Image (cartoon, rainbow, N blue to C red; front, top):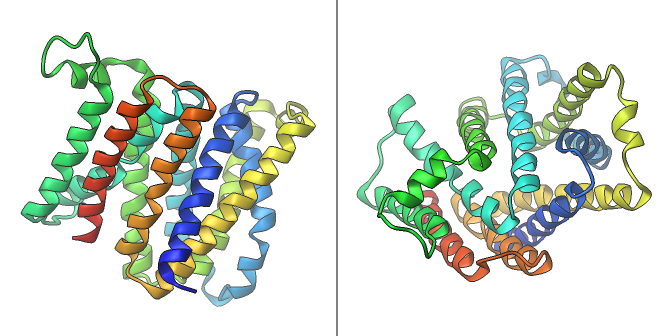
Length: 293
């Protein structure tokens, strides 16, 4: 199958997953939801274990993967808190800033260098963020940025971005330096997700029955759908990266943000949707320049 079609399918199902997550979070606590999704997704991820090279499961790379998954699990939880507490058309454009955070962190932490075009990509991401936050009553140029950093409602977003940045740097180490096979990465990352969230739930509630009790039959079916969507978009992304450079695949995959904003924004009747769509397009353009360069 063509890599572009695979990446586009991944984007569609990723967007559908994000909108479904918002709907499920109307009735579920973010932690309980994260735990249930991790367990159900693990069940649907069992086929990935058939392609795992088990002689490498006690290697250093697996230890790094476990550390990385702790960060990713925390990031996922904060993303769910962001989606639960913000409108989806407001949260997702900000979460799309991850490539900019990763690029700047690479410069500061591991001595990466950025070209002029890549810095322009970062500038576009800042411009998109400014567009997202500017309002009719804005009185000064820096007011949108001040509101972004001073408002507590964005705290979950920024924590998620920081955690995703650290997680992405470890992704690069695992896949580039340690050559961890993608199927091994997928299978054990999902297993670690389920274990980590189970431990957190166990510590918080002194048992794992509480999240299950809070779920209605309708919400449980929605969680199953989200898990299926998650496995499909992850699998098609892996298949696409076998056929084309990762940067190209991720550029197409990023369309999921725009799809989720448009569809989710209309579905949930969110405010200022047109301006947020424009902001998302600018942010995604910046991210695409960063990744493709």
